[in-house]
Image 1: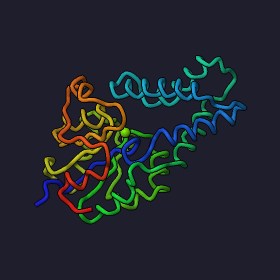
Image 2 (image 1 turned 90 degrees about the horizontal axis):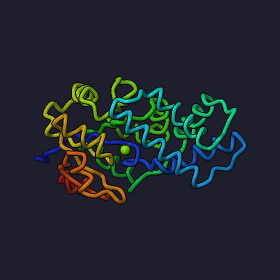
Image 3 (image 1 turned 90 degrees about the vertical axis):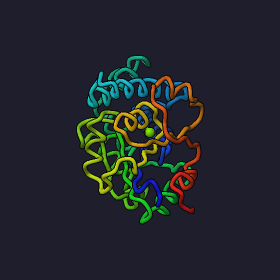
Length: 236
Ligand SMILES: [Mg+2]
């Protein structure tokens, strides 16, 4: 008998390439205000955005503060004035929801697992953006369910988020559920705190020192999503 019956998939930077969508959406928004986005501006935005998401995970800011605040800070640092920040924000979310790129043939992997394990999305993204991206990418039709923090009312890694997910899935033995995600601070930490096995999808430069820094050790570590078959004990 296979140990795992159920997978909780993170979306951004696990199933879908978030950097790709972000670059496309932001550059379109810059064009809408008559600017050509530079690499330095994209890097600055990425730093500001990452910082806001970390603060959201820590409960220091609300989602609303994050969604607008990151652009207000970006405009301030770049000396951009007179921009309708709410319009910019709406355009950005629409852009994020309409462009996507798969990581490691993730759609084919999820599709091949359909009927062999139950699969759910667990994401901290904005509801309208995530729903749009999951539908357009075809991922929503291979999933058994979608859990979005905005709908649940608390984000990963908070216990309430995972308790909600656990109470809405068929598998009642959480040791038979596997969380797969790239974020040590939301996916892995959240899983460890909720007592759900975790698989860290390590992309790029992450090291075990980071894991120890977060204080949570994942049960598995992969750098290619195809390795999920080995963990599940299933043929490709
Ligand atoms: Mg992620």
